[in-house]
Length: 185
Image (cartoon, rainbow, N blue to C red; front, side, top):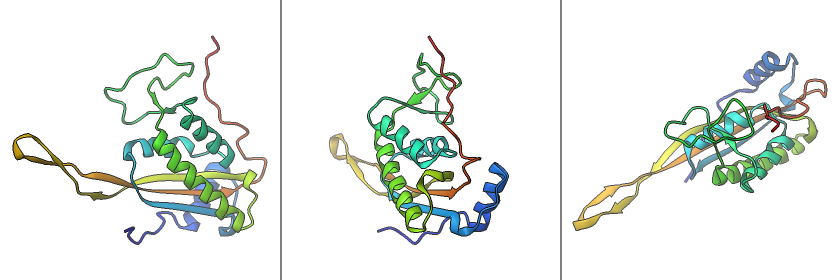
């Protein structure tokens, strides 16, 4: 059962964050939030996806994550990359990349929820930009894995609390497209 939650950023802090990043003052009516508690998915991959979609518009993030689900585009892995395969891929700056399909599906559901929340508040979905995305560890679901000779090993399942905050920005400061350093071969 999900426990009580609260967003980690208040509307005032979101407005301050938007002003620092984009130089635009916004009101609390221009902010939309979405929260998904206790999701059964990888916490580390959730952090990487949250970091990657921050700064994108809703359409850009949804299009990219749909391509991740179809295994067409990867998500860069920047923090948890020890002993991970390095790819000779056509992008520069992040040779470690993965296709976290399960995480991308959950984020797509959350982005759909965020878009509906924005439309309910009367925001223009084309001008909504993700200004904050975070994944926090949830509670552990205890499990036991049977072993040989009557032994057992504890095997807990980690859950993740994901939150996304978006703001409606003027057309002048909206990112036109998400830039990747693609190498032409």
